[in-house]
Length: 501
View 1 (cartoon, one colour):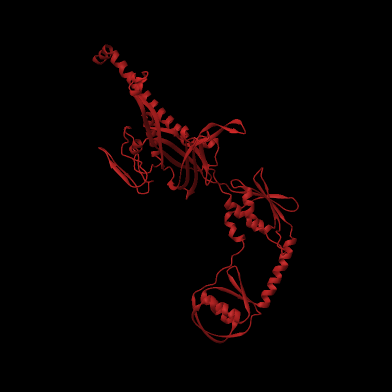
View 2: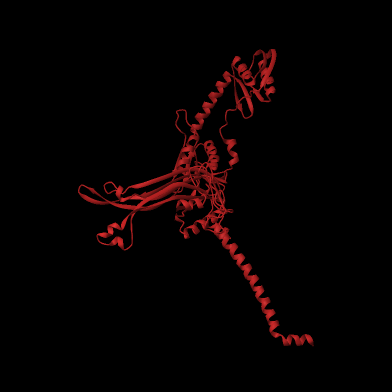
């Protein structure tokens, strides 16, 4: 009865506990929903950077003289078996032999056994020999015996075949007859689709694999269909078999690189606050931080906490996680009017192809030609060219060129043509994926004469000349360029909208 009385007397307390439990459950559900939503948008943000194309197995269409076609799969591992065999070197290990009145065939077999080689001797090889050799190179002994007895040799796979000169000439004659027959063979036709490489440039490479006739003319031809980027090959069957593995190795997807840049103009003091000083080893210290610059001018160290931007920390060379910190730091300094972000281009290019950014203005001026006044323009631009090259899928070599134009003062113009002051910088640097490099040293100096004086009094007639004058306003600054390359990974599973989930 006491418990019932308690619930009757405190209905507000009971309802309060119930509402608190409901609200707590909603908060947890809302938190889980927020976490799931965050992870979803984070994945979409990573996906929005793009991907490099993934490789796929090549299918080539084959056709014979009757016009029948079929599809075959070419394996890269089959290249070595069908390619032209290279001339193999002979052993050079030292050998000692002392034999008298021995059959030449027996001598050659003993010599081959000493080197662990397989040997085949034609039945026409005959004669006897005397030999006394101590610690002589195997190849010199072998070739000396052949020369003494008028013999020749050739590799046939892993076997050395020994024959007389007459046998060798007969073999050459058979090879010549075989060549004559090859010239009479019908040409096979292959249509090879090229996915990633330029078909025109690949054509030049493959033409070296076409057999030549006795007269020196090429047997067969290779044509390019530029509309479909396809090679149409008409050649001997063996030549095509040698070409296909080469195409398999050359026509591979090229990695794509996302180039992110921040082009910043700052005064000298702000550049020091960022810890960047160019032209040699440099170190200074304030009340909180020590700043150290490397000997080469490109090594740099950011302060632990950038002045005026609380909580922002930057490292030696920014890794992939530090790029966002760099963007936030530069934006905060721009809000405080300590620097000016001229541009933040983001360009995607393929390996070994230039990514170019160009922005600026066209300065108009008037010129006179045969009494006619014409309005012409000169460019004053900021241009950034970056050529990336991926090394081992992790490091990136960057060839960087920067050009900064400024319009000179009107007083230095010649014939009405405004002067364009150009500053350039070129460098090569190797970074890991997601790291940031800095280019500096493009100093800016501007002198401008301005009127100065006592307000009110300098404008008085006659007497104002005693209260006014001219001053030179000097403005100096540095152009800093932060460049961050990202290697776009291959999409797993081929790519498509379905693979984004």
